[in-house]
Amino acid sequence: MKAMIFAAGRGERMRPLTDSTPKPLLVVRGRPLIVWHVVNLVKAGITEIVINHAHLGEQIEALLGDGSKYGARIQYSREGTALETAGGVAAARHLLGEEPFLAVSADLYIPQFDFTQVLDVLHDKDLWGNPYPAEKRDVCWLYLVPNPDFHPDGDFGLTLYTVNNDGTPRYTFGNIGVYRMEMFDGITPGSHAKLGPLLRAAAERGQVGGEVYTGPWHNLGTVQQLEQLNAPLSLRPASIP
Image (cartoon, rainbow, N blue to C red):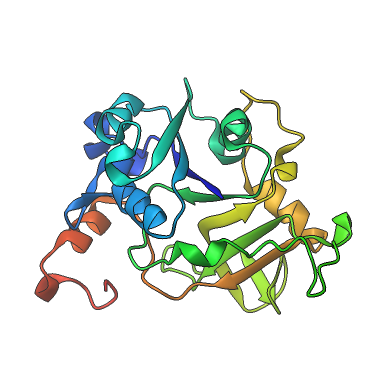
C-alpha cells in the first residue's frame, strides 16, 4: 500500500511561524511533524510515500529528499497553489496508482498510531474468497476521534463500523483514511476540490467504513497548541499526553 501525506496547506493560524517554515516542518518533541509520519509509516512497512506541497514546499523536499535515509521512497506532487485534499489526490493520481491508498494530514501529531492496522481495512473478498459486488465494497475507511474542544459537534456518526452523516454518537474525522481511487474519478487533475463532500456522498450511500481511534491525537492549529506539546511534562495541561 502507498501512503499520501497532505502537506500543501499554508497554515495561516500558525503564523508568523509558517511565514518562513512550512507547517509540516514545525518541530514537535524533537522532530518535524512530517518526519513523525514518515518514520511511523516505514515502521509499519509502508515505504512508498507521496507528499503534495505548495507553500515553501522546497523546504520539505530539502529535508526529506528521496526518503532513503528513512528507509522510504518519497515522490512529490508539486502544486502551484494548494488544491485542497481531493484536488491534491487527483493531481497525484499518476504517482499513487489505482490501488487503495492511505492518506494522512501532515499537521497531525499521532506518535502512537499504528499504521499496520490500515493495511487490510478495505476487503475485496468475503471469508470464502468470493469477490464482493462492487456496489457493496466500502470505498473508504475513516479513523474517527472523540470530539476535541475546538470541534464539539463532530462530523459523523458510527454504527457497527459504518460511518453515517446523521447518527449518534458523533465523532470527528481524524484526517486519517484509506481510499479507493474510484472516489476521485470525477475530479480533473489540477482542479480545486475538497474531500468532505465526497465523504458525505459516499456515507449517504452506505459505502464508508470506519472506527474510533482513542490514542493521542493532536491536530496542530495554533501556536499555543505547539507550545503546549513542547512544554516540559510538568507544565503541560492534563489533556496533553
